[in-house]
Length: 580
Image (cartoon, rainbow, N blue to C red):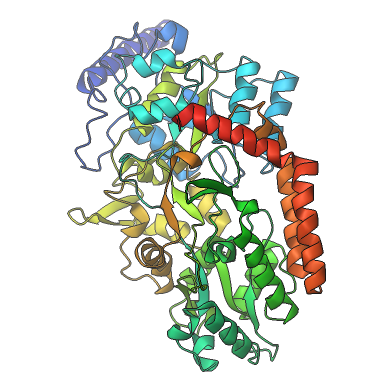
């Protein structure tokens, strides 16, 4: 009986080997054309069987494992996603990519990474972080990552070696080495997609009307002030006075749109250095611009008049969201995401159901003698860095995944987040690019509940590139959805075409610095000074106190953050890198 069982097992094993061989022949060259975008939306399979098992995908199977091996990913942000999401299951079944994720426990990814490196802990096969030269420096110094020079020139790969040469130059260190693969970068470098630009003055149109004002009244700073005073006489559904203007200072400084309204750019350069403008041939940094002071003077005057939320300097994002939803705030500035409206709107159709439906984006009010600045710039360069552990035993699987995700197809960002086309999502009209989620997946994915969304997808779009040819969230079929579900994409388009608070990247945005530079070493101290004194300037109880705080602010920039030295170094680096 035992002999029969053994014979049966041997026969089954032989059949499996034969079937595997047949399957391999059917899939030969499956990704040989991975870099050729036919815009079909078909994800295909990620394994490249054009090479023999002995040769492997990039290196030998003995050295680098199979492409179907499970790879582990250290993800440089927090998430509630488990490791068995529906998208991960589909990626394994349909594409042949098997991955698990380890997320940060806090937003301080650099501290988490340094603790791992100092303890000698094992690292996952792949690591992804927001663009940060400190991460690169830490990993290179610890000698824990793979040098990718050969990857970018490999004839075994298609997509990674064909990434735009300007992005490859951006990745190279001063020694010419390449240590990471880009994430979230523009396919069309010279004409990049504008992105989710939602910086605006967000005003409740119902309160605008109730205050006896029109759109024309908020086109100037004086008209906006009068509108705020009129809103201050109104009450919400609970009988409490309306707060005319609110924002969260916090880490993101949501008052930055007010600063740009007064003619000052506010987007930090890629080095982390505060925004700089070329004014009449002279470089003027944000904190040195006279209009920076004027913007805070205006905020202080409105604050003392009771027209700005008394909690702007101390309020949490959750508290801010509560005020928005409960109808206490007449207008707020800058970032739609800070308000949470992108999720709140999904549940409603009309303003009768929720007053949040009345918020609309408005242009900066005109300030006499000033041309509005920008709160952001369109940067075609990568926003994320992807590293490979030099000690990984799964380099073939890791590079197979990264080769697949760097396919320049505009649909790839959707597939890495939601699964291959015709699984969780499908085209309702492929010619126009309109798509929708499969019904049961949609119930969870569009629930507006972050925990339910995280349970079905880890949303790893940061690994992919983006294209102006097609962006998923501007093309989702809205049939049967609430009116609110379409407002975020609607207003993103408005903020990309009518309410414009961004510009193209310039050389002076693109100055790069080393981790041990004066700039890098002082950024944290600089932020500390700015956070402290901008709050003080907003809340100063008199003109005299405001002037006192501003004067202290200017002194502390140098005393605490070596501001003059930072600027001198920046000028030297700008000249070295751009020859001007």
